[in-house]
Image (cartoon, rainbow, N blue to C red; front, top):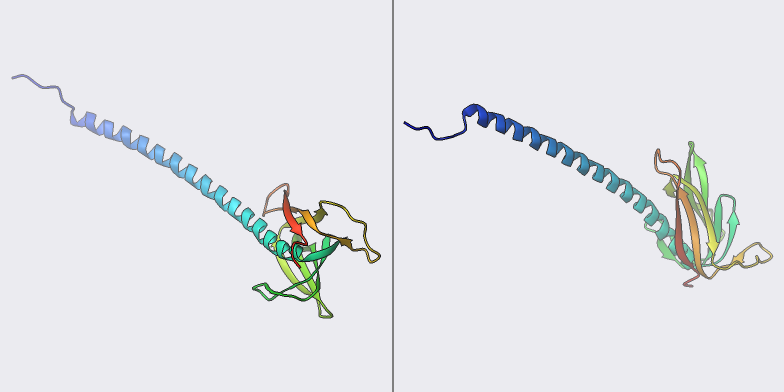
Length: 182
């Protein structure tokens, strides 16, 4: 009787063990890559969310601004509107809006302070972790006798913010339009 070549049970079990080890190693590498990608996406989403939140509020104020001046920790604009309530409802009331960075509990935050007419100032936290904010119009204008400079056209708002544990602060220029609407 002749024997046909075949795998023994021991050889089959050894090959299955080797394949299993290779599959587990491949899954570990894939899982590590997927987790790293998820962490990066979350960090990017948090950054984009901060930038988008700041941009949307600034854009509303700057579109209706006609004068601006630097103030300690930021800048102020004279606008033809007031943003009211948590939904930021637009009311056509002249107001002065100040964006400034203030330190609270050892961390810096971007505040928006709005004063309309003779009413009391309304303070609103725009974003946490903002280190600096500054407005730079495309063309510089001499200030009037009250210290306000006319503002129309392109401008850049320079922001620097830091996420928790991030070093150094992230520098972001926001290109916006000042005085686009009245």
